[in-house]
Image 1 (cartoon, rainbow, N blue to C red):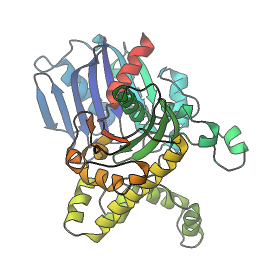
Image 2 (cartoon, helix red, strand yellow):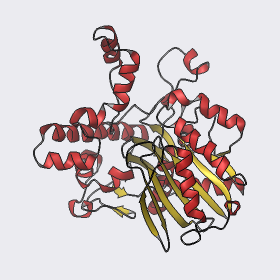
Image 3 (cartoon, rainbow, N blue to C red):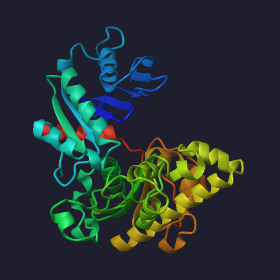
Image 4 (cartoon, one colour):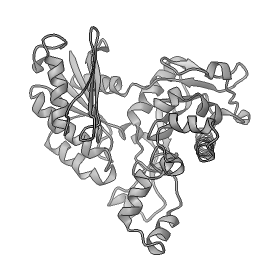
Length: 394
């Protein structure tokens, strides 16, 4: 069975075509800078690798070019779109409605639209990918996999905010958590690696967006992202935890509008606000060259993550393993080292030589004396979506 996975972002489309249940990648690629200057499309199969700059004004054109590659007589991997049995979509926010993977119908699409205000950078783009895919692949079952679903196992004491009860009961305002597809994928890999029936794990997803999850026996019991995708850790352009009094001060005393504050916290804060850069590779390079803003930003990021590790060790009442994943988690030797330094009270001790790696497979980086395993596990959200999609239609 062939399943196409689409991860539609605000200006990009990541895609992979899988043969299931073999979990074989038939082809993969990325459409980036949609609607921006110098858009590119990347396509890779067993026999071909193509990188091309072309006009891509919107998602419909972008996905249309992907389909053209898939069907191409020379480089294509299918003869007709009807060969694709299902299209699995990553959807960031599923609210309290979706705790499982679902077949997409009009009611599901309406609910995804209702949740636009809760994930304004993500859900509209996810929805656009669904609409375009329905046109391009009319014979395929369209399936939604929600980033929030993995966190539906959190107990009420973890997801409820200390505000009047009506806001949860009537308005469904609560902690939802995100990056659940990634946290679930690396958790399952970690449990398999540990070979234990019971486990206490902290998963650390570090990319442009960042989150941490406390996982007990394979189930999420707490996570750093909350009602929207801005709580918790310091991110590429998002502030993470901030005292809400600052928001009122900006509005009431510094003449900022609510929209300006919201935009600032989502798009102009985090590493961008601290350094002028959102890409950690640039920040690390500048810090090495002596840039004090960049050095401080790295210190702040590592410090915030350490705080959450301590919090989740308490929540779990122990710790078997820490998992680093996603672009930064898999590749930043420096940040992993900074996070794990001076954590011997918790039994966390990193081996600097083992840590000197940009992981392409599951890699242990703890020292022999470490009581806690420190493991880098490359995430594969597309494979996780393919597995869930295949299981659903089976």
